[in-house]
Image (cartoon, rainbow, N blue to C red):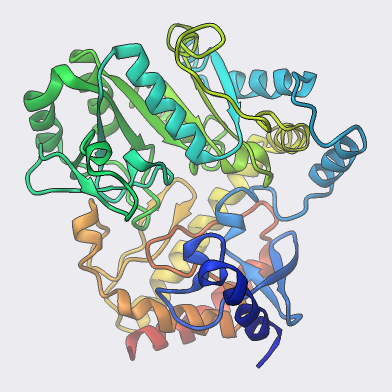
Length: 437
């Protein structure tokens, strides 16, 4: 028993399941979770002193790498001035301006106002309340397999049929609340048309991950995000683009910016941000047009508040991260993602493992299917049992992967040739382990 084992035993005696977020418990891969003691650049060190090349990156925020010196210095400087004020600060204004300035394509600027909050769940929850307040409607459309935080109305599982009111997907969620959410298949234009044909006059908004990364990486089909915007707007509803994970991770203007450059032009009404926007500190945001965002209190009737919203330490980390996230940073991460995706594909092919390597920008992962899935139902049919031996083989060779096949792999600007080579060297043995499962 090493330090990780003893810590997990102790943790389970005082923390439900021994973790403070469920996926950390290694439930889908088995074994003892690694308790991390420190991180620097592209590497993390566990409580037993073992170092790993990291492909989790704090689930996305570590765009620049862990403990980037300039980000750490910004937080330290902010801390010397006070941890929290419960009052406006200059930094909040600067960060809101940075967000609004980055999310643009030519003259198109979907973010005119920004509200800072502390978590991605708060951002999506507030966006939904805002959409309901702006439209005077109650129903929300979401896609099966998309994750938007753990607020009650979003923990809904699909019922039968494309226009069936959802049932609760978690104990503790009242059925009448879950019933305000309509769950349909992702990347399915017919399902989208059908749900609006049935309920269009009562739908406040459609919420969608800009590119899905919570059922594995599943990119939107060409034109699908634009179709969502067009369909919602034709029925007087709003489009909420959830970029908590992809925002400022795959492009300077998020996945929306990547799509604009590819010619897929659409304008969401509300965009939510998290992870990278706080540079690893607890911070998230939502933004949109002035007409919609000014419905929020204290200007409008939609209430939202938070003692730590715009926390000065988080804001300092966010400002430093966004200023350092230059086009060169994104180009480097894109190139590294392309290299590793190719190496992953080659290793699994050589081992005779049926697989796909789905990508959305620099996000990628593995699916044990003959081709990349297009929706959650297909993603669930993969031979997911192959991931646990693959995961543990990589870990034993010093590479830390997300502990679920349904998560994206994240690279950082700190992943250099040494780290990429170490990952590539581990792949053949991991592929062989997956093949023998």
